[in-house]
Image (cartoon, rainbow, N blue to C red; front, side, top):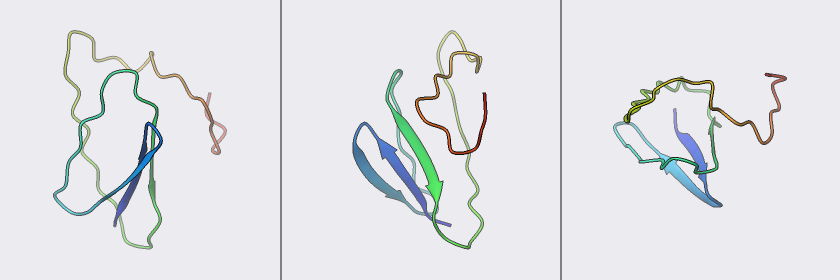
Length: 64
């Protein structure tokens, strides 16, 4: 699939084997707007790698 990434007000289309850096605190969302499967690998770096610091600004999926 193609990943549509919204990152700090800009839209990026990511194809197979593309990568992008998302800095700490950046407002971002990711979508697959195709019928093809999208496989994503997320790599975190830094001294803290937990996910309890996620702040959802908008959520169409009803997650907490």
